[in-house]
Length: 266
Ligand SMILES: NC(=O)c1ccc[n+]([C@@H]2O[C@H](COP(=O)([O-])OP(=O)(O)OC[C@H]3O[C@@H](n4cnc5c(N)ncnc54)[C@H](O)[C@@H]3O)[C@@H](O)[C@H]2O)c1
Picture 1 (tube, protein in one colour):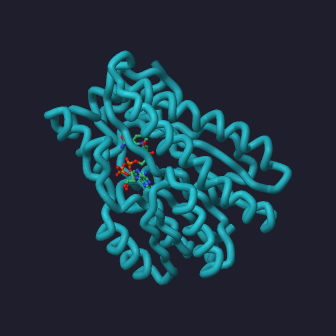
Picture 2 (picture 1 turned 60 degrees about the horizontal axis):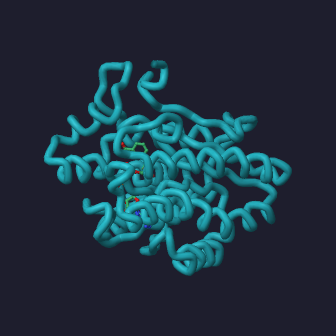
């Protein structure tokens, strides 16, 4: 099935995997609603997407011939996401794809984590996915179709040193994925999660700067891939999302799609 004239709502779209997925979907004829914080936050302490990133994404997407709306908002704030969904429906009339991708990552030993850091991690990476979904699912139910992809991580399938709060948020996304898949199958809505190993994005650059390491060292330390690569590229993730939201995956729901360069084999 062609994706032409479908509409995708993508959170965390200014940077990295969200941006690559927006561009890949646009090339398939999908109109894009791109949502991002668009400003720095004190935690996690590295550069998040900016308003300039959102606007440059908008012009790149429009160059492919589809429409693009951009929204600056915080995924933790219900009114931000509600306004963006409302505006998307009034401009595009539908939402076919939700890519729950906004996220942060930071290190911290379990017994030393400040409560605010725990809360920020869970609120952005886990609660944010629910906030977006709860406004978009009624639209998909009315359309009798839809696709949701939650961007988890290999940290959603294993434990990771100094990343317990990150791992908890990413395991939580697996619970949401499986439960939503059950609830939404009768409405012809599929829900899947993806689990990338280290990805070559600004998140890794930011973590590296905080740790005084190179992005490659960060990727190698946190991953340990079987294939001899330190990381995968954001476009690899975009290809997986494209597959999952296409009719080629019409019977795939509730699944955990692993892009791990073989890491989870051992
Ligand atoms: N980079 C990796 O190695 C890796 C690996 C596996 C999974 N992931 C996950 O992939 C997703 C995308 O990460 P990325 O690698 O593209 O990193 P990234 O930092 O480049 O992109 C994340 C985007 O989310 C946005 N964002 C952060 N907090 C937000 C908030 N409160 N409200 C709205 N937007 C917010 C940022 O501005 C940024 O544009 C994240 O959920 C991340 O946890 C990353």
